[in-house]
Image (cartoon, rainbow, N blue to C red):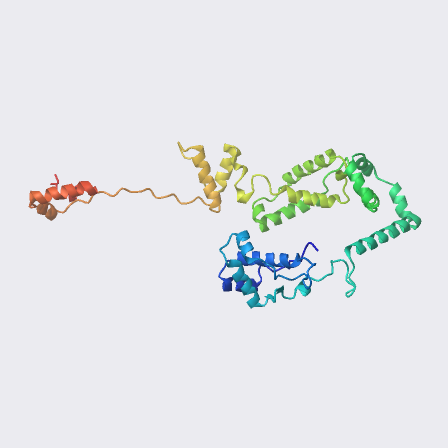
Length: 369
């Protein structure tokens, strides 16, 4: 058998986390070693006496250290932790027969399980019996096969050799295709959007805009519904082949609305096609309270303010305060008198220190004029 079961929840199994802590290794290493152990247990040679699937006595920890590019002894510590946790014992995976039953092997006389070949053989016999009864007694199905719609005739003209071969292998293919095609039809040439279709589009897109972030602000208008209806009609009238035939045009219209998405220019909360021209930008600017561009303001700067207002929920952000350069404080008269009485050597040292540290002039010891 060239495969084994990997059960759901194995990666998040708390036992593997315990093994990782016990062995002092990352959890990814433990999962890799467990997968390697299961593969080795499933792939054991059956020729040796007493060796059956589930046996891991021949598992080479050193070779797997090199395979996984980990430090020497890592796989041995992990295997020892598996044994301590009760997941492996006596050179075998614990409960291998329970976790890896033989239902998909070459049959099991004990459980009564059938092999894959036997199940396939019985399936073919059932198919032959069904086809025989259909050809002998089901007159309505034979009549339906003869009454093929024009749409299905078109699709048969484009059937490739590969498709013909696939249908030949599937004895139900021709009957299924004919029954489905008999129920399908093209969009009528004089089709106009029914009122209930348009009302559904208006109500559903409004609901989408209120519930989905990607539809925010994208509710369709009546004009947009008519625009999409024209696209819908032209698309399906221009399409050829079997895909142009539908059994439920109402469902096709509903899928068309969902796939079309919100109105253009209103995706992602309104940031969209308002950038197309200065006129559309001015409409959006007035809507969010930005207004016209300032005199001598560049177009990019104006657009940036509009986008910032949209992201701020429709309110222009507060202007940033301009930086104010602090003025040098005016020294008090007492400080001026003290500097005048300062020895020249001290004043020279202060001036040199101020030059190195770029201190204000009133700290250099110079006389303020």
